[in-house]
Length: 315
Image (cartoon, rainbow, N blue to C red; front, side, top):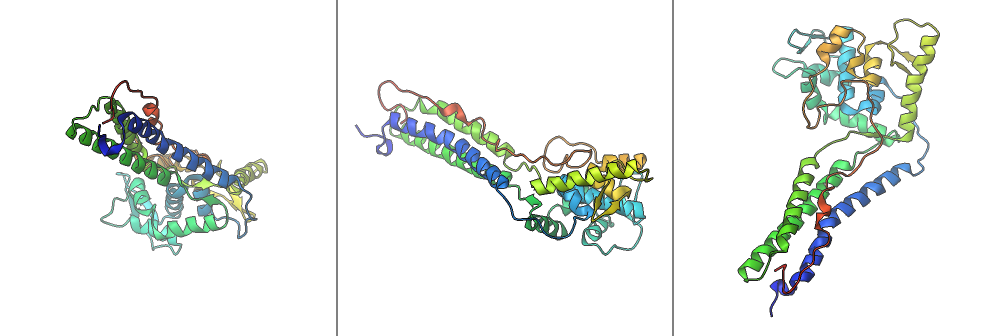
């Protein structure tokens, strides 16, 4: 008896079941390795104390940086918010690269809402330069989760294609393929799940030193408020010993919900969206979490223990 591809059906089913769980195991292993790498001892962090935009990146990533720049420019009068929640440039372009990019985003012909400017600046040159500097100083680590999820997706796609080809070959050779079909359903379902989450982004990951700096910035404000210093937002901080008061510091560490003017805060916060990258990065007072997980393939374990009675049930 000749088998499809020279592999008996039960043997192929066993191999295919292993392949079904391999992407999940590989993704989890990669994620664990990345987490362990973050916990490894690092060289002493060098460089100047972080600016308000660096604190914003540590607290909420690129979107929080954009929100902080918007807050600073609105407070200085360089930008104004229209009744339609569009930002309008009302003064000269600032010299700071990030602020300049934000101000240009509020020019005519652009979607000059907070969300529109976020979308354009996430991968801009000034934003990437800021991220690289923080990473070089040991304050953030690159987010590897999207790449892990993409690899897991393509592994599951390859497993699905292999199963489909085997099914077609088995049918063409008039071989029994009934036991292969449930495994193909599992492979297809796992591939769909992996595809749905492969581009999900979780933002930058502050290192322990980055989190320490954020904690110090928030603690410094508490001390200043106890001394009775006026007009300091509830989430301000310090950098280099200088008080970070004003709207920029408030938004940097707490999000647009902490803009000192409630009316402007409501106008600047974009409405919530359901899912997708960029929808929920800095409207409230949350900061980045330091954990990540490879969740793209959690439904793949259905290809476990198949058994056959009789002939080549996997083609």
